[in-house]
Length: 402
Ligand code: PLP
Image (cartoon, rainbow, N blue to C red; front, side):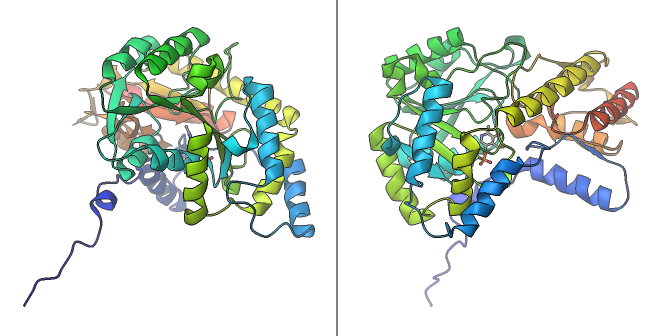
């Protein structure tokens, strides 16, 4: 008899790494449900409600019956508003045909990779990175090439490092400023140097700018695409409303790309998911047309927590952190504690550190998830009271590491 048995999963599906963030969050949730007090520093979304003016707009979308398919790449009015946003915030001129609205920025990123990457293509990813990037590259049969940056350069990859990583197979560079997980914000000079390397080598850039409104200490967000026509022609800008307007559940992200790329993505999206939720799109038109007060209040709250957190962490023996100037995360470096013991058990890496910390009532994300195994990521999208209590527990924990 012929053996017709085939492997159930494709190689692609089998090689995807489950999210470490979710694993530790699940453990922390279980402990909480058992009545154990846990301070969770894992949050990847603002702890603010979506502003009322946006919720009202969604209600209106329902009332007026805006509940049908829209064009696959987004409702025309929204694309117009997005073009205005790019012009106002980033000095970038796009036509609506260069804009694609998708079901979250994550979806936009996936679309870009699907459109550009095929087997054998190399994608340069500065590390520490947002953990989704390498997985999406793998899903598109691409090869990740990591460029490592550490605390000595505020976790920013340099143009020289990127240049050295480029080979004839390189297709794309992923840039994420402000960065998840490090909070790093590239300044104009750094971006100009990177843009020069990109243009000279003929590769493309995916610039993920989803945290653009959350910059502190006088840092200014620049879109690399705004640094000249040559680099603009090689850049796909990713943005969305999840972080800026506390709309993570609404699932609206968007991209701006050279026309040929936008057209290809439009066709692919029309067969994969069609349009992003019509109600969310309708509300996003209104979201992007206002919200300054909300953004400023959220920004100031995050900044206050960021400063408080940095000050406390820098006062804890064995821990260090950079001065993150963006997003709502701090990478805490615990290199000095590696090789030491907590209750007789050695701390070898970030998973050991995070697991032991969990027994002290604190959940953090191990840096292994971001290619920084000597670090853990702490989010400050939680209350200042929780931040203080959590850091008190972390300090007590470190004092028992010998
Ligand atoms: N890009 C970065 C760097 C992120 O941290 C996130 C969410 O955590 C996203 C993109 C995805 O955002 P969205 O909710 O729009 O899919």
